Length: 264
Image (cartoon, rainbow, N blue to C red):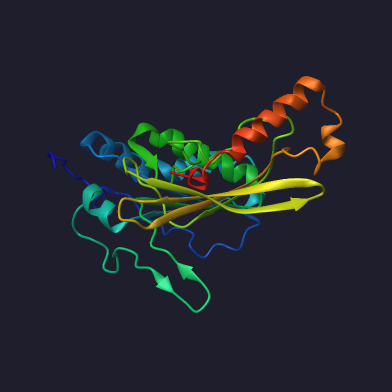
């Protein structure tokens, strides 16, 4: 780690320490924002400067509606504290450990900075989040940046036919994906069912981190119009060229080995 002077302000500098509003009343809207601090002394300097400016940023947004009860609590992770401020450390600060209960689990989420934003209005929460991210700029990165899967092969996916429909998508996130981490995705067709004269295919995509732990599960419910005898009403709307195309697709898909229905 390159030299990085840490000069935290204290009461000796003439500044009065104020407690964060941890016990603020329950609000109608809230946002949890977790970010990581990028390596480099210049990025750490930006974050330390931001800590001094956060209260002013909150006040600037709060003035738009003083009755909305806008508040923001900023937490610093154990590892980030050492890099940003050094000694002395808060007495009870330690890496968060996963807590498992009979029904629920509080996962240990990696991240350097946590912002808990609350207000009676969601638009104020969004505005404060935007101001925070703008002030931190390129010094930080979101701890979770998984948006969707990237497939090396589309062998599982049926070719385009007239009537394809993405009916429903489901996402479950279990762990954050850190910047620069390598992930692996496995896709499997887990179900096929009929609904309202339409056949649906359910593709499940599991994403794993470098340690093999599950990061997310995504399921896509897609409808494909394949068989004329099973979908007479839809098939009747096609002209001769479209019907011939559907028949060709059916023949091509039917000739595939079963193993090509799972990709990664």
